[in-house]
Length: 153
Image 1: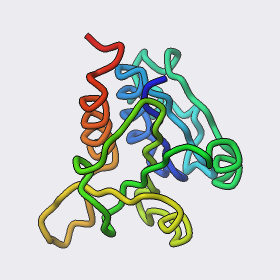
Image 2: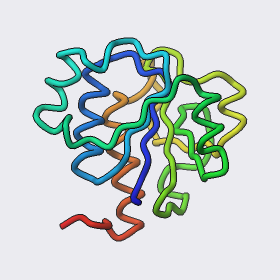
Image 3: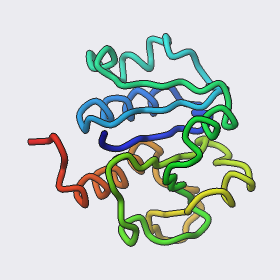
Image 4: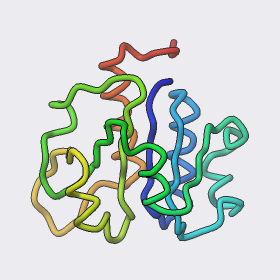
């Protein structure tokens, strides 16, 4: 088992498609927590994931509570713009979960408080944050680098 990427109620199908492609090419599992802002059968999701969608290790969870009931005993990092250590200051290991919030609203406060928050450094600007799929790639590759890129050539 490598890495687990968790999207909390994702809203933009193109982001999810791009993240799915990253998951396939890094041997990571993608977890989607409902409600989703689109159908995973949506052509935009599959187009963003290109021909990799059929190779994706995907788990869809009916709710955050269902996800926690199944994986709450695991290490879960939450990528957030609201503090925490920089993503590269944490030590990652195989099987870890890295959760990312909705594009428009992130996650509720109780979800923030339940997990170790990490962040990507950014300058202060009127722009909220980096694109979700870019942020996933940045953090996932740091975690995989720390694991010596398992099963990757």
